[in-house]
Image 1 (spheres, rainbow, N blue to C red):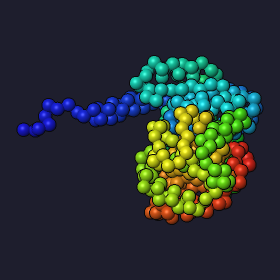
Image 2: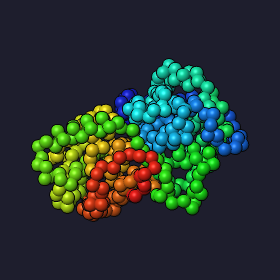
Image 3: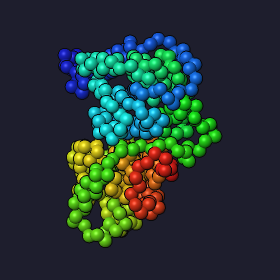
Image 4: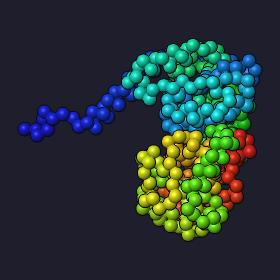
Length: 395
């Protein structure tokens, strides 16, 4: 007799099955909205005049992907300074990330699980259909949801990548750039420039020396000043001599295999502290509101993206594994060092002036710390400020 007979499935199995069913139903719903076929019009270059209402369909819920949309917004504001931009997203922090952009009109926020909240989902779709857009953009080369929403919009021009994951025609199709040639945040800008006819020859271009804008959450001067005041209070118990060369922020969290353990950080920080005696260390506390470094350092926590970004903007250097907060530090203007173990550096490494990526795979924490120390000593004496075209890839 089977001893498991008659027993109910474990709650975790039920939850996993429910999420899988929701994903399948949501995909079916989205594909049902997609226009059939993949034939694309030949509309010529995208015009630089006559475009005033723009829709961007980027439906990721993650902080990192949300931040990596900001270079496209900078480019849109540069090319179409008199236009308004609506953004379709699943990000719960979209208002905070995009709120500093003068050209952004509104965020249309889809529920993370569309089928679990059908009325909210349909309400956003109805809002999407209420505006006649001059240009709708699907900036992700992989997402089928973004393309379906673009096809559902009432837009006279549609722009997106051509690829195997995409369904529906476009008025302005652009080929996906070769893998490994550019950062994820550069790709949407490449898409727009491709449609405008202003792209460089991607095969012959050194992407580390191009004028592609880097991530930027557009912190105001008063936000940065309040962040400086908060950081001063956090460090009030330390002697000024202990931080005469600046402040290093450490974020010890990440998701999945990207996370580095407590013992790894202990060994890494032992070498880092010994090699940079004039720099203070501040731990950036994760969403769990719990120190991952045994409360050995002054610490700062905030559930607000902009408040956290304001404090990060006053650090001399930020160090963490590949994660959303790493991209937030990059977008706040701080010299950022990302520690990578498994994810693709060519796509996800922080970029812009003073930013670097360090590989940790098959290396000891001490070896990684020695390389990071070299970069720390090269860091600018002042915290770099975000800007569109004066920040160059250095990592």
